[in-house]
Image 1: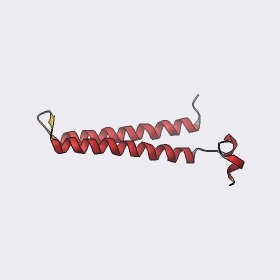
Image 2: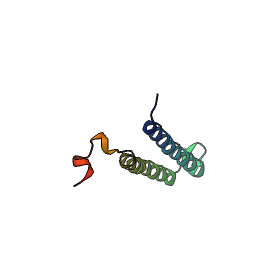
Image 3: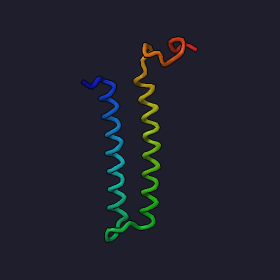
Length: 81
């Protein structure tokens, strides 16, 4: 059985992937001409992929902070510095 944290991670990850796919479809439909992508569309696709990498990095860091519990022992001295 999946616990709460795993469900949250799955939902957020699938949401990010769907957002990337929607952006790729948008770029393809906007900049595509006769089943080919224009050079400007190619650059837009590169930016979509770079944005996806940055988005997943931010999501990973956000989930690490949001789902971190003190009893897991991940922070020294119970979180006190």
